[in-house]
Image (cartoon, rainbow, N blue to C red; front, side):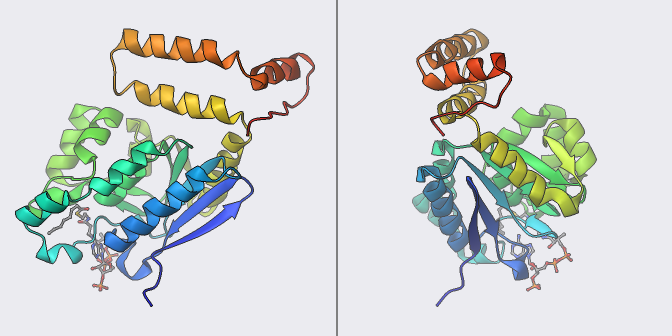
Length: 257
Ligand code: CO8
């Protein structure tokens, strides 16, 4: 039987997915793609889960798409199979996903991290889009998400030279939300995810949707979307509870989690 390429665990209301191809620095092959997306979708559908963390090993979050597996790929096979298209399913995941990145996040690994809603980086993290060194360009969102996150100048630098960025530069550039000592990364990611999972789920889902809307529409449309969502949350008991708890100086007990 083929060994699984990921491991899943639950920690309270948090679903954890660990990439687990240690001999290949978690390079993303077809099996890992299938198993990772299925695991994330299962957590997304699970009422007991409120947030998801994706992580790798200490040495590598993921060192890219599996270069060895692509030996037989051709223009025709890529076109017919619409290579990398299964990753579009990550766009439909509604619960927040945090990438906890330790070590290398290169090529498809950096792109997987950017598919998550935000990245927490260990102080040993290194990000890069080295596809250019293989005579390629990023194919899982690198030219688009990286540019939105860090701007054209830095995205050009990364995609055209293939150089790596350390955690400090990644945080300064807006690629990562926070840097954590590598030894504390997973604990901090789980704690952050648990904090999110303790909030009102409808508010969390709508906050995620509203922030992502920013990349899809112009400012006035985005502001209108945000305002209408804000209005709608007053239809929920959790909003009454959140306000009452603040006034009564106690922790809110959200019903919809
Ligand atoms: N794919 C397959 N295997 C990999 C990958 C990968 N992306 N990265 C590392 N490995 C394997 C190595 O081949 C090695 O296996 P083995 O022991 O059998 O030789 C094992 O993992 C350990 O790697 P290293 O010995 O190289 O470890 P180092 O600590 O010396 O170096 C690095 C770590 C710097 C991360 C180095 O492994 C590296 O440069 N890896 C490749 C990084 C990269 O270029 N990533 C981008 C991939 S491209 C992509 O994501 C998009 C499309 C790819 C299409 C390719 C078609 C030709």
